[in-house]
Length: 434
Ligand code: SAH
Ligand code: SF4
Ligand code: F3S
Picture 1 (spheres, helix red, strand yellow):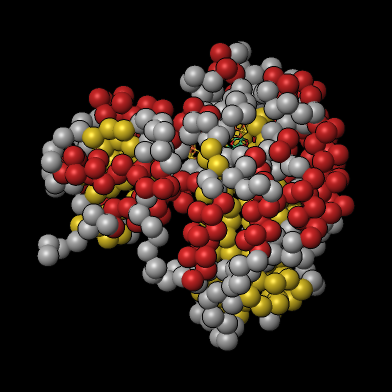
Picture 2: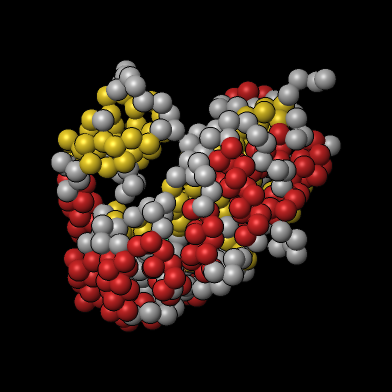
């Protein structure tokens, strides 16, 4: 047998890309590839890219530039671009960057082995179709090797919401749910391999309809799997938070008290212009209902500042909404015009205004994040231990609320869940004792 070929995958963007990279690695493993941590000795480099904001998309080009010397030194090295930039501008990349051998869009990963063979034969290989067949059906079955205690599992892909700023409906295509039996099979497989926490993924995961009971039904079925201890899901749209899912937060013990529920803006005018199809008030009422079901839930969100037409008053509405909701965690971004989306054609807010708004919003959000963390001090949380810490004898894991928790101990093994008394709150993590 010939020596295995080495595959280096670099992943940008959201958790769905993390999941896809893992599955691409598995698909190419059946073609004789083993993973490597360094681009320097790779036979194939795959960039799994993100197109969500301009900065994210630009990284592809700077990264390709860094790989040029490797390609010059080793003409047999194959370079591929996958993910959402591949979908959005793959053909252009291939035309402009001769060093790129392979381009594959997010819905075509099951065709990677063929594309790889084509690239190996010295041809250019490109596939950015939205094929009829389900890519997951064709991807190699996950191999039974042991793995870490947490895993992502994509249950739904694509989006039909068409928020005016967003490329996802174009790069990932229409909303598609995977059948529940497949997900259950994959989940059992992961649990056999040592996984104790599964995060269900979808661009609009709570619109999942592959189970007769929707996402809540799938969660309840998963909760019955022995050995699976924790369930999470992300990302949700407020309009798809139905009663069954809210109730599950109060009733399913394995469903963790953490919810990422982006609102983007607190101004009704801006929400309308964004095509979000709900008001700030409706969002706040929804949060209230979720908190009735699960009072200790930690909320996370996404915000965009400087959306076209956003005035000072609109921005103040966003600040007011954040004050009212109180987030434990959140991401905020300056609006970035994306080619092909409706908002890109509108007149833009000045860059320095966006900067100032982002600074104020991030100030408030990090204050809230710190307060939520500090409030954990003195409490007992359950930690799923994931890896050794940076210092000798230290272990790191996550609490129910997704806070990183450091513990000094020699008794804990990876994959164990233990009660921890929180003693300290640091800039980005907690510390405590068993
Ligand atoms: N499907 C998820 C989010 C996908 S993108 C949802 O609907 O919530 C993740 C986040 O990136 C979005 O929530 C939004 O806050 C941000 N985002 C998307 N497009 C953007 C753009 N053009 N400019 C700035 N931020 C953007
Ligand atoms: Fe993008 Fe909106 Fe769909 Fe989320 S819901 S992926 S922000 S279009
Ligand atoms: Fe980025 Fe595509 Fe995810 S654009 S955020 S990698 S769906």
